[in-house]
Each structure stands twice: as C-alpha cells, then as structure tokens.
Length: 428
Image 1 (cartoon, rainbow, N blue to C red):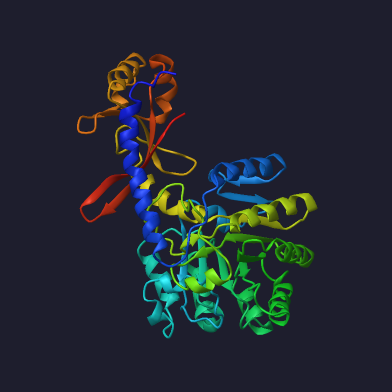
Image 2: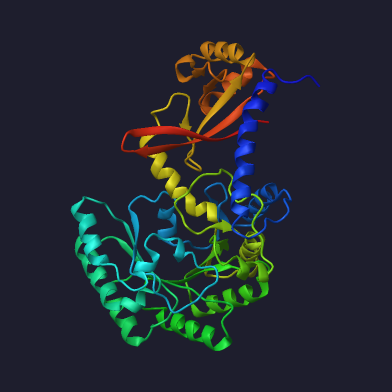
C-alpha cells in the first residue's frame, strides 16, 4: 500500500512527543515505584465504558467519569471547575493513610499545626466578586476545627445562600453534637472516607457515623480510593451503604503521591503504564495512577448495575479530576488561536495538521470549501493546520493524505497567554 502524502513529515513531527513521553516516564520512575507492563489498556478501557453505557450507566468527559443512578451536583460542577472552590482547614489528621497526597500541598508542614482562616478567605473571595455555586471544606480532618467549619457555613449562608456546601471527613470527631450543629448550619453534603485497611471496629465506627448522618443532610456519601483487586470487600461495602440509604459513593482511582514508595511496593502496586492521555504539568497533587485500580472501579460500577442498587456508584478517574484545570485555562482563550477549536468533550484546544507535500493539497481544499481563513501555515515546521470542524470537507477533497491531531493548552502569566502544544497523534 502506498504511503499517504506527507506521512514521513508527520511521523518525524510526532516523534518529538514520543521523546517527551519517554523522558516523563523516566522522571516519574525515579520516585521509586515501577511502571506496570503496557498492555493496551487504553482501548480496553474505552470498550469497557461502552459496555457499561450500553447496560445503563452514564458517562461524561470521554468516559473518564462513569456512574449509575446518581452523581453529586458537586461532581458535575467539578468537570469545569467554574464557581466551585475547596477550602482547607488544616493538614492535621489523625489518620495515617499510605496514599495521602496532602504532603504535596503548598505549606503542608505549616498547616499541620496552624488552621486556615477559611471564613475570612470566603469573605475575601466575595469581596473580589467571585461567583460561587459549590463550596467545599476539607483537610486533613475538618472536624478537628469544628468552630471554624461552622463559622464558614454561617458566612456561606450569608454571602452565597444558594451555594451547595459539602464537607469531607474521615468520621473522626463525628458525634451527635457535631451532626446537629452541621445540619443546623445548612451543610448540604457530607463525604465520608473509609479506610479499608482499618480493623473491623474502626470501620464499624465510621459506618455508624454514616448511618446516623443519613436523613440529616441532603446527601450523605462515601468517597475513597479503590485498591487494585479489592473487589469483594468493596462490593460488600457498597451493598451495605445501599441498605443504609446512602446517596452514593465516589470510587477514586488510587494514586501514588510521589512519596512513600515502599508502602506501595510492599503491597505489590505498580504505576499505570500510560498515566495520562495527554501529558502535562497538572495542578492536582494526587500523583500518578496505580495499575489495576481503574479495573476494580469499573467492575464495581458493573456490579451496581447488575445488582440494581439504588445508591449512585461513580468512578472518578484521575484524568477526570484534571479536566477543570484544562477548561479554566482554555475556555477564556478558545477563539484566540487560528486553526484551533476547543473540544467540548475534554476542553483541550485541537487542530488538524498536514505536512510537506500535503500542505498545498489541504490549502486548496480549504479554499474550495470557503474555509481558507480558518487555517494557519507554519513555514518553520512545514505544516498547515485547520480546525477539526473542517476535517470532513478537507478529506472529501484531498483523498489519501496523512493528517495529525494537535492537542494544546493555553498558559497564562503576567506577560499574557501562549499556546503550548502537548501532543500530536496521527488520525486514522
């Protein structure tokens, strides 16, 4: 079969990004945890999500978020990250979770012994004119700072009366007094975490708190990372939560937070071989995904469907957590760069590129379709690029040319904004 026009030039351009990925993987491996063997899991994942959707599940963000029955309104808002903000009480916490990524947070050590003035921070955000529809309180353990939490909720009710408020807690410090105070303050959602490695008594204590909370708040749910292969224990937990009347559970992809590698290795965990579809320096400090966690999460979603459970079971992948950053960087500048369009599914800016001898062919096709003004040419790298919405018109006219999809993000600093190309992949 004859090579497509411009294929060699496209391959040479794409090769640069292969080198970047190799450098990234080498750097990530230096933190002490090995990568699992690549197994083509990306395509398998897409197939698994398609099967779940065909069976009645719902999916968003190109399948990075998959759920049954119900998903918290805060999770819906999280995908764009607009009008939503999380306030940290402190990083102090009585739990010692091996997967905790709080040490990656700025000023972690300081906030282990100092509380954030979260109510004052909310007042300041209001003075700045911030529009808020979702407000979250987290830690560490926020219930170590119950008076500050209650003050925050009081201020939220005054300044943002329509905002949906939620609290993250391990259940430490949960009692009737705290429950009444939080409910009276208007807290809408409580997200409990359960540490599956705890002994039975410790887990029963959290489950008792959850049972007590149901009926006192609009939504009581559980959010926790899922250990690879922990299907049976998680299945039993989900069934019990369903019987308690819990609104839902967020199944998080377990991540390696760039420290505590020995704890992960001794459990036999390895890094997911392709951690991101698009490599970038994301803000989220959760680390890199662990191989096998995603498979267990999807199996639990499938179980919830087949069992006909009433509670919502939501798989939130690491990449799903990164989408809000992409939207916030790209949305304000979506029309500023010729040839690029913002993809409504994952919010990256995307363009189609053709190289070398394919350039004049594509140029003529765009002119013929009246789309010449949407294109941009680059003499240094010998390509022409155009928005993906014009792809059908170009293909109908030019025939068998090699095309690549460019994926980019806008970076902002004090000097303005610039487009950074993150990946180019051949279009089949």
